[in-house]
Amino acid sequence: NAEKETLGFQAEVKQLLQLMIHSLYSNKEIFLRELISNASDAADKLRFEAINDDALYGNDHELKIKVSFDKDAKTITISDNGIGMNRDEVISHLGTIAKSGTKEFFSKLSGDQQQDAALIGQFGVGFYSGFIVAEKIVVNTRRAGAFAEQGVRWESRGEGDYSIEQIEKAGRGTEVVLHLREGEEELLSSWKLKSIIRKYSDHISLPIVMQKEEWDEEQKATVVKDELETVNQASALWARSKSDITEEQYNEFYKHVSHDFQEPLTYTHNRVEGRSEYTQLLYVPAHAPFDLWDRNKRGGIKLYVKRVFIMDDAEQLMPTYLRFIKGVIDSADLPLNVSREILQESRDVRVIREGSTKRVLGMLEEMANSEEQAGKDKYATFWKEFGQVLKEGVGEDTTNKDRIAKLLRFASTGTDSTEQTVSFADYVGRMKEGQDKIYYVTADNYQAAKNSPHLEIFRKKGVEVILMTDRVDEWMLSFFTEFEGKELVSVAKGGLDLGALEDEAEKKEHAETEAGYKELVESMKGALGEKAKDVRVTFRLTDSPACLVADENELSGNLLRMLKAAGQ
Ligand code: ADP
Ligand code: MG
Image 1 (cartoon, rainbow, N blue to C red):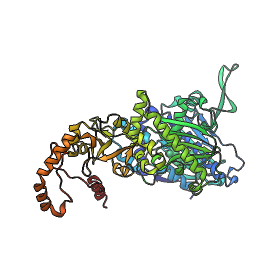
Image 2 (image 1 turned 90 degrees about the vertical axis):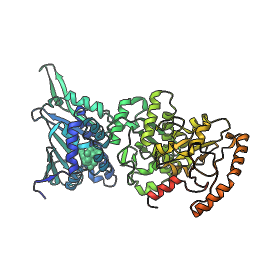
Image 3 (image 1 turned 45 degrees about the vertical axis):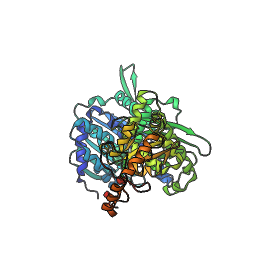
Image 4 (image 1 turned 90 degrees about the horizontal axis):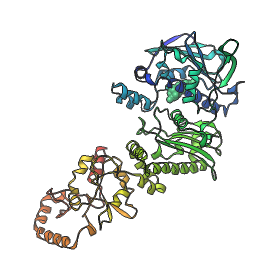
């Protein structure tokens, strides 16, 4: 179809564009980072496809990104010789949003500019951020392997629609031309563009080149030379030595791999030698993505083999409960033509996954055990965002169960706050003289847990009880029977044995009281019949007259309610 056609944006794109232009203006420089990031991804994809088809390179083997500007035309152009796009790809990539989590994102928008700006950042701004500074964007692209006449031009003013037509394009790859809005002229400067590139895109492993400019003594002016210069360091960041990488470079690299807008909480960067040789650069984000609970969601690890990009979202490289970790793993051992199927079975991959899991747990422990307030605050943020996912690890990762248990945080009767801040170690440190068990109660929510009648006797005796109210808790508890030799006991189950917490006098008194109520208990059993398994005199209540308890080996009341709600 050679005719120029006009197509409408998907409704969500229109909405995103509106929001972005208005709420991200104060961060407008990031458009360049996003477009360079895309160019770099395009080069990675070409390198990967070319592993099996070297002809895709044609006679152009040197991958690079070029940034140029035209003062008179008021344009900035970002061009690459990466994979390029065909017509269908242009329509689906630059006309719709196909990301998972899109629905959640749009449902969370509030209309408040500041709040929404942060949300867009989390969602990922991407290509459309060009419209923050451009009134019109023209994209000329040609897919690797396609003929010169099969080029595609996409053009839009970022309002309701875009046009698309077939063009002839000399080289493969993509050229994004931004026609700047009135007032953005300061971007039309070599110095300005270079400083933005160095700030946000220095970590890009491809050369980012610009036309060289030099001061000319004779003309007393800067003149543009017929020569290109590389603006960034142009080497894979993770392959550089740690001492050569600044905090800012680490953070910017994170934004590139994660498509996130905010800084990460922390990271770990190591070269591993031995049974398997690989480099890992792994980050903990500061907030959960919109699709954290999406079952189809893949992991956040990019796999490289000897610097060649192999795939995004290599979920085999991280256990599911660490699916929020972002970063890069570069293996020296895997074959370049590795597929997802091979990854599934590979022994090297298993070694890498085990090693990376340990690294991540180590990184979390470091935050959790930090002496400094900043570190503690980071762990609290981490727990709020990802704690529920980490709990899945108790069931999923038996090897590391004990390490994970130490990372867990709970609400408890000891803190009087909904915040989950109490670790098992904190709890054990506060145990009463004679107490040898860890007590907990499960409920739908904090209020219900806190007001549970089962807690009365514990309050009276000053014994702390952990309040478990997250959906995964019941499931997690089924894998959990003790922490460092201390049994985990539900306060709502069975005949409560308080052990040494009860003294002899109390035990005697209880036995006498029980005997005194024998007749009443028998007649209640008769009246309730099948409805109750047993009726007992209880000493666990101080204010409430009666409560229901589950049998030792039975599903708890809370789990039964959950299963019912889930239609089981
Ligand atoms: P993201 O990079 O998070 O996927 P973007 O909005 O930045 O989202 O880009 C959308 C898609 O457009 C990319 O996933 C890619 O498929 C395509 N794309 C954008 N820029 C380029 C480019 N320079 N070369 C090839 N494809 C591109
Ligand atoms: Mg992008």
